[in-house]
Length: 315
Image 1 (cartoon, rainbow, N blue to C red):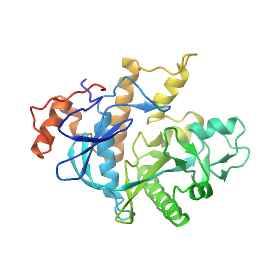
Image 2 (cartoon, helix red, strand yellow; image 1 turned 60 degrees about the vertical axis):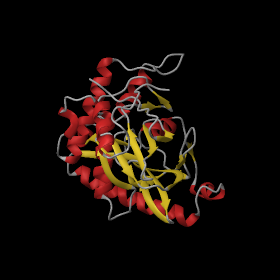
Image 3 (tube, rainbow, N blue to C red; image 1 turned 30 degrees about the vertical axis):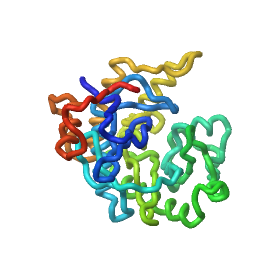
Image 4 (tube, rainbow, N blue to C red; image 1 turned 90 degrees about the vertical axis):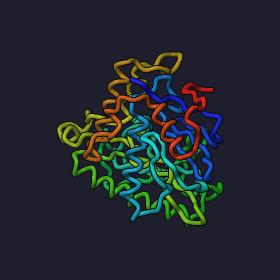
């Protein structure tokens, strides 16, 4: 299968290259976000790209941004390609609002080692693997080269946000989480935890980046969880994390995935898209080159010339 690991073109001004998303300035002044098929885990980008991953992330983000406009405004203008979205400029707030409904992942690993306080939130003794919290917890982190747990009080003291802005973000994050949890529960999915990112546009708080995708969230199959919470089927990027943990050596985590693991990851991304939206990913059956399609669509928008040189490797 063809993938889009990188998108490099001299015709567009590169604003930022993230682990998965690349941002460009288009001639009209807006920001173009290209969602690649790269996959990051444990603060590293793997060498193996995942087929359809970028389109799934972009499509799901667009789906959720539209569904939650009544809760909070967002930066989306429109999708211009299955792997690209045109958005409004905003000043990013360098805080990730992590909302957790269950104890799992890094929180569970810390808990099993004796940690009881996470980003200022203290949890009780006696919790079991994958146990649901009585109420969702908000455990913010900083957005730095390596994300850092931090209390709301320290976020304010260090100048990341004001107390008023943090409270606004906290309340909105819980509303988003509760809305999505209900939506997914009706479709047999548990929203385990997720993160939200915000920005300021003309002084107004808006939602940016992505929302309720397999990269920003954990999902479990509700039926599997009901049978055995500790072995609930993971239908998200945690599948990759667990594979990396199981195959870690003294040299560190693997940098590449096997073909079988990459194919299973792709299947999981496509499956969660369909389960959430009720429809298969529109571009999944396209027998086209992802890069060619992207360039054609950007050319139609007048953002670049179709014959321009474009690379899909890291520079």
